[in-house]
Amino acid sequence: MFIRDIVKNDPKQPKSINQALGGYGAGYRAVGDLHQKLRRACQMLNDAGMHIVFIAHSDTITIEPPDSDPYTRYDLRMNKRSVSPYTDNVDVIAYIRLQTFVAGDDGKKKAVSDGKRILTCHAVPSCISKNRYGIEQDLPFDKGQNPLRKYIKTLQTKGD
View 1 (tube, one colour):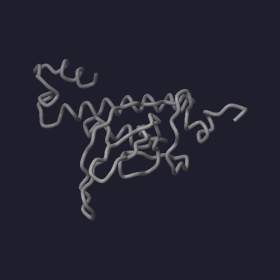
View 2 (tube, helix red, strand yellow):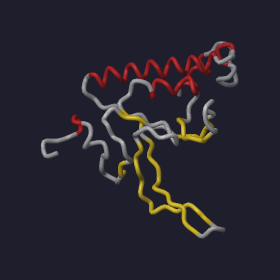
View 3 (cartoon, one colour):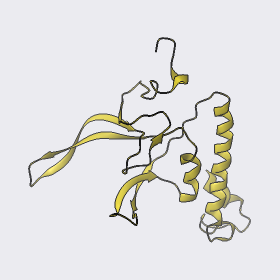
């Protein structure tokens, strides 16, 4: 929506966000600024006692650290200028994935799943994830259950 708005309201009528606002990344910077505004507005709601959840798709990127071998990790499917409002100064960044196992003999191995999902919200190299609640292991992600309820006091009821 932000990209569409920036392109639509540019008086030069660019064909894409790459050309918006004169090009050279200006369109992406403007989109990043809109994400920052949204994040600040949501912080005001959070300060008033509301829990805010952002949901995004993921892509894979290659990380090339200067002191070790390159590896692939899951990242948010967004322009890098728009990611930081959702990863900086937040309580939880979690990644939900199918629990997967490798099965088969030496020649024919394949990934299989039992359909269960797990929530990763602690630091791992395979995805962007973190938390401020001391969670250090993957959590089961069962339908109808909030796996974070046990860790976040404001999600708990008197019986918890």
